[in-house]
Length: 323
Ligand SMILES: CC(C)(COP(=O)(O)OP(=O)(O)OC[C@H]1O[C@@H](n2cnc3c(N)ncnc32)[C@H](O)[C@@H]1OP(=O)(O)O)[C@@H](O)C(=O)NCCC(=O)NCCS
Image 1 (cartoon, rainbow, N blue to C red):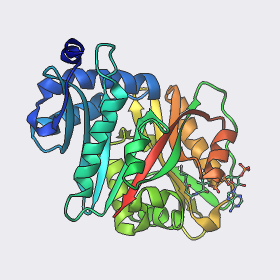
Image 2: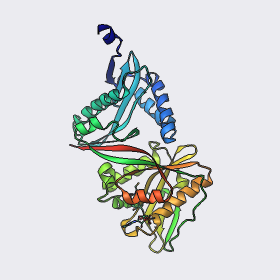
Image 3: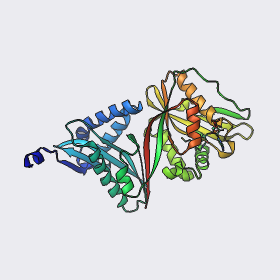
Image 4: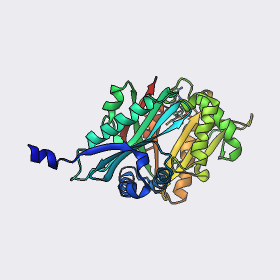
C-alpha cells in the first residue's frame, strides 16, 4: 500500500500568481489545440492575453501542479460587484491524475474565493469547452443555478438562400455611431429574457454599453468584424430596431456575438434577414463556418437557427450565483 501511495501523483492547487508564462505556456498550447478541435476557434490571441496577465501577476485564479509542472488552471475576473469565471482547463494526458477530479478542485477553490470576496454579490460562468453536466457538481453544491446552452454552427459552403426583405426596413452595416442606440436595443430586447438571468449586463443601459465595449473594442470573444455586422433601421422613423454583431474567431470562422430585434418588430423576418446578411457577407469573403451560442430555453431563437440550417455541435452550461 505504501509503495502505491508513493507513486500516486500528489496534486497541489496553488495561487496562479506564483507562476509565469514560461510555466503555463505548454498547458495553454494544449488548450489552443482543444479550442481548435472542438469549437473551430483560434485561441492564440486569448492565450497570449492570459499569459501577459499571468506575467503581470494580475490574473486571479489557481493552478494545479503535479511534480512541479502546471497541468491545469482556472481564472476569474472582477467586474464591479460581479465575479466572472473566465476559463478552466486541465490537460488530460494519460500519465496525469484524474482530470475531472482536478477540474472540480480548481473550481471549488475559485468558487470559494469569489463567494468570500468582500463586495462580490454575483458570480457568472460559461465554460464552453466542458460538456453539459461535466463540471456542474461544484457549482450546484454551492447554490448556483444552471442553464443549458447550445453551441451551433452553420457551414458556409451551401448555396445562398434568398434574403427576405421588408419594405419598411433597411439593413445597413454597423457603424461606431450606433453604439448608444444599440445598447438601448439590447436592454429592451432582453427585458424579462432568460439571457439577462445569465448575463446581468443586459439589464441596464450602462451594462449593455459595457457588453458592447467588450465585444467591439476588446478581443475577448474573437476580433470584432465590422464588415459582417449589421443594423436594421426603420426607414420612416430612421430608428434602429435590430442588430447583429459578428466576430472573427479563426481566419475563416465567424461567430455571432449578438443578434436581437425590438419586441414590437419581431416575427417580421428581421432576425432572419440580419442572420442572412452576416452569412452572405462571410460567404462572399470565403469564410467556411459561422457559429453562435444560444440558451436552450430560448426556443424561438433556437428554432430560427435550426430552420436556417445551423447544427447543434455542443451543449454546455452557464452557471449563476447571487449572494
Ligand atoms: C431571436 C430574435 C432575434 C428573432 O428575431 P425576429 O425578427 O422575430 O425573427 P424572425 O421574424 O426572422 O423569425 C423568428 C421565428 O420566431 C417566430 N416568432 C418571433 N417572434 C414571435 C412571437 N412573438 N410569437 C410567436 N412567434 C414568434 C417567427 O414567426 C419565426 O418563426 P419560424 O422560424 O417558425 O417562421 C428575436 O426574437 C429577439 O430579439 N429575441 C430576444 C433576443 C434573443 O433571444 N436573441 C438571440 C440570442 S442567441
